[in-house]
Length: 269
Image: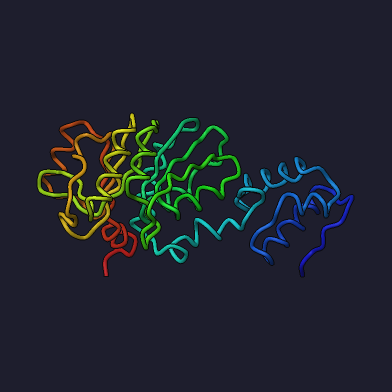
């Protein structure tokens, strides 16, 4: 049964109605709830914060969504796999509470955008439409989309994007790639993509690499070297030689191998 909002309800009943509406509509708006309950919008925002802290919902720009409708259901929404979600969770440790970040394109980066804390002091710059949409669900996070020519996957590139990036400075850049060559260089599939990734790399003080791919060097153009990064998270694990070089450079490195994790959870057959 869907409970109906009404003026004068106690806080506990108001919360119950909000959750009931969320189950039905998958999203609620602050302005609509404030009008229905005959309370101030700040009262509704306070209700949503309380419910979010209790793990009942996820606040989004102008309202709230079901907690499961973005992060838990993210693989169904974007095609992100378990390794890509694990990469995003690992990278989350490098997101500052206050500061500016660049988030690259790809499922791992879009997953990271969905997991961002909803803090007013966080600014997100991206060249990916899906990342911008995911991050903009956070009510207090400022999101800046660079613009440019949009590819089939929502990634923006070209002169417009490069010129916009040239005037940007960020605290942390999260860069994705699907290839690492034998020398430990990150590769991109096209020169256009490599140029954007390199510009974002140069704009950042701290760089975090999210490496996801099934081939040692699945790319045409190199844009950076792993040893120039602050942190590297990879799935599948990199070659022993490349991993050794990263560790010797004192870089925060983590190989995320979900195949091993799955075997450990299942136990011996």
